[in-house]
Length: 130
Length: 130
DNA sequence: ATTTGACTTTGAGCGCGCTCAAAGTCCTAG
DNA sequence: CTAGGACTTTGAGCGCGCTCAAAGTCAAAT
Image (cartoon, rainbow over all chains, first blue to last red; front, top):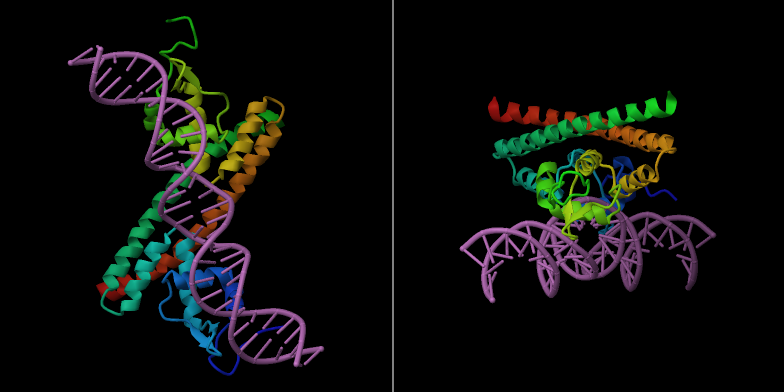
């Protein structure tokens, strides 16, 4: 029925974590294989993954980076910096700032395009509705 | 040379059109093959494409739909409506309005995600700069 | 004891939107 | 006459981000 936490290693099962994060279990395994996790995910019974709070927080950030269009390879680069430890905060900052700029540029283009589409919509509203 | 509307000299070559539109010639041929054009593109010398103003305007709209993330298949559906002629303006309007809603939803998510990333950026700025 | 079901791994497959390769045609310049 | 270059077609290939199939393990429930 419900696979909840066991005594060994607190944390969510992969399906519970997936549900909590709004992704599929497939995607969680894929992110891990792709080298996006900071540390190996904990295991219970020496096989089932256990997602801890830190994992969930990290994946939450990953989903935000993905939602804003950052490619997997860039996320991996960022993860590597974080994994490497303190001392490269400037690099992480640069990476995130570059991404931020890319997103803003993208947002601007979408807005411009949407305006044109809105104009088209207005024309059709005139035609069908007037 | 001045009276015939299908004059060979009328219209841009595919490379000129591509440049004007900010896409590649490959993409223009692809759009055509994908059934996105309203009418067959004119030909000069019975082989080379000639893009007329109406073609350019149409592709400009296509690029705006693409820039806002509309899938090729939806654009094709829209093109089919337009190609079919007058009488289905309500359908076209519905299609565009549905797309508009999708874009707004997407924009909202991107903005939310970007805010979280901005927070992260602020933290790094503190760390590296303080 | 057996069945169920959630998990595991590896590698393959998919849908999308281009992007390119190959082979051929045609026009123009030298 | 020849060479170059822009074009043509068809079909294949690619990069991305998942998504899934297959075969196996394990623990709990019947």
